[in-house]
Amino acid sequence: MSDEAPRAGTHSTVLVVDDHEPNRFAVGSVLRRAGHHVLEAATSAEALAVLRGAEPLPDVAIIDVRLPTVSGFELARQMAADPALARIQVVHISAEANEAHDRVRGLQGGASAYLASPVAPEELLATVHMVLAAGRQAQEARDERRFALDLQQAFLPRAHKLATLRDIDLAVGYLPAMKHSQLGGDFYAAFAVERGVLLAVGDVAGHSLAAATVMVELRHVLRAYALEGHEPHHILQLMDRLLLHFHSDVTATMCLIVLDPRSGVMEIANAGHLPPLIVPADAPAHYLPVHGPLLGLGLSHKPATTARLDPHQVLLMITDGLIERPRVDLADSMEDLRRRAGQVPCSPHALRDALLRHYSVDPEDDIALLAVSRRSDRPAER
Image (tube, rainbow, N blue to C red; front, side, top):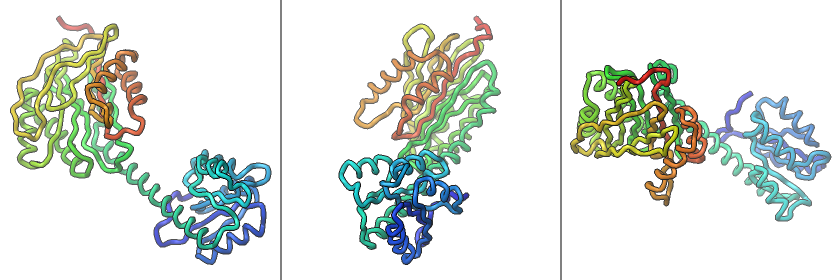
């Protein structure tokens, strides 16, 4: 059963549901003369039976709201609740239920339009064509978003590889912005190096294939520079030079940490990114005071700051898409995150899940998140 939306310039399949046969005939005749394929049903039960046997599914269902036994409103609700039928656009029609509250009920129930019967042929066809166009656009947006998410996920480290990192518990998350189908530049990285584990979260400015391409390039050179044994701040310096040389119009932020899981010692270098948050099990969460200039500006980066991740603490690194909202001061958003993180069970997975659940409703920007703790079954070195 295909879920492909009708293409522009092609005729579509329309289901007409009305218990009054002359009405079905009149509406169906107008649609057939316009080149549409028409299916008919007299009741909600008959309509569902037609839909179960339809191949392909109708693109639009024109449903009388005053159907016997099960109303057209309820039929539309049942269709919307069925994943196989939810993409069908609904147009309600009625000769009697045309008061404001009837129209509101239909539109709030998911109908794309509401017509009063009898309806002029020109209005009927214009409405069907408008609804078909809207359906095409919605399907294209869903397809683009699915492609963007799949491609973005392909750029990020696989969970099974992250799970092989020894001596730490790690949880990561990535969500694209709801209002952008284009690729973004947010990323995270976690891999073993000679001195422990390198952890990084970064954000290339912009939403485009170009931003995603630069993001992938930075992830690759990050791995190369780290495996060569460069200090964290030197890695940022090299990445800054790379951007200036090859992508002079691009800036990026990154927080980079080398963690020794045995001792808990962290070397932290920050390039214009939100500072990492330490979330203890029995004390208020606090940000580490590490700052530095953006990548891509040609400015120097000071040596890494040293800190310690104690047992029973979680290190949280995020991109600003998690908390940044229009007309809300970033300092207030950071404080809200600090308080909220302290109210969650102190484990990487619990923290990630709780924060994404709270902050990821219609995000304005992409979100990348990394939470890590030292394994509690290994004693700390002194």
